Length: 402
Ligand SMILES: *Cc1c(COP(=O)(O)O)cnc(C)c1O
Ligand SMILES: [Zn+2]
Image (cartoon, rainbow, N blue to C red; front, side, top):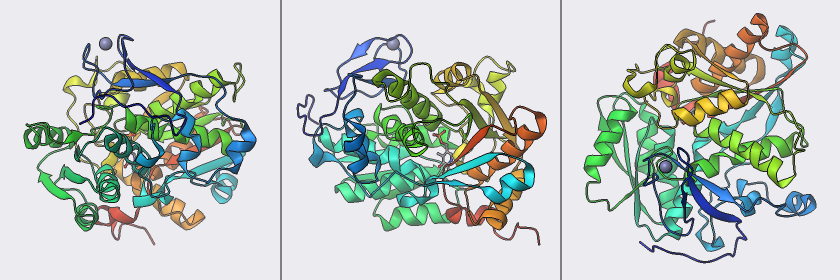
């Protein structure tokens, strides 16, 4: 692996990495995974000045790479892309009308390559792996991240090893195999897969791209925050609902809003959205910590859920997620398996979206929060649907009500 790289063809403004726990600074031009000081996630810092004028931005292709100055890839030739990002934001008029929302929006990440927002993070992580001369990557996954890693590694000509729970719907592992990845099945949840990945990669030959254990997946996910802002014409929604597992999306979107303020594309006084983390009753470590029912998720035991992406019992990004919730004056909430199925059916029947159970959970929560008064009828609400429902058939087949 190359240890130091210098190339500014993308005009990336990245200037350092920073330990999310103590703030210690690390070089962005050497390869780092977790911080050496605290073994916690590293966050990328940029020279936060206005990177380009908006007219130039608007003239660029509709992918997440239109923000390349604010992304970490240095050499344009290292970008590994399948056209990810710039997914549409659509209005849910039928449901809004029926339940009394003034404006209910859905950003449909199911339209990304490989059917989920995991494409953003893995496109970025694999691009950086390529930039640093890495030959292969390994990932513990609940499903979607593994598929995305397999696809981007295939595109980059790199080896991919995917470790997923045995109960994951078959379509996830099948797709990985079509991309030529090596797939391992483990009895347990993603934390058990992480342990297995550690064993498989004991010699460290492969780059472990586990959630937040390297700094770049987060940089891919943050582009959702840039897009929401640009697509809504630099006016943010009042509330964003996000299905939180490992938390990269939640943390990344919030990082993006703060960066946009720093470069002046959002006014310093702009009110940022309240961020709501949605989890499954079966695995809700963040909800438990947020409401003080445990000190941290360190010993939390979760159960499987049909929303596979939410089965993350001990997220390393817990502190960063909690910080996002408190800084944004948001909250955390969980819902049942049955409610997710109902949400899938309502979004399907009323709006024509076949969303992942993770995304369906958001709609149910929006409806409950309007009823409880947490969301006001005149507020603009955005549901961040993280994935398509198509690969979840083993979990939901035939469960719709006629
Ligand atoms: C991974 C995943 C999530 C959880 O995302 P994080 O950023 O890890 O919190 C939610 N929904 C889907 C469909 C996923 O694949
Ligand atoms: Zn530190």
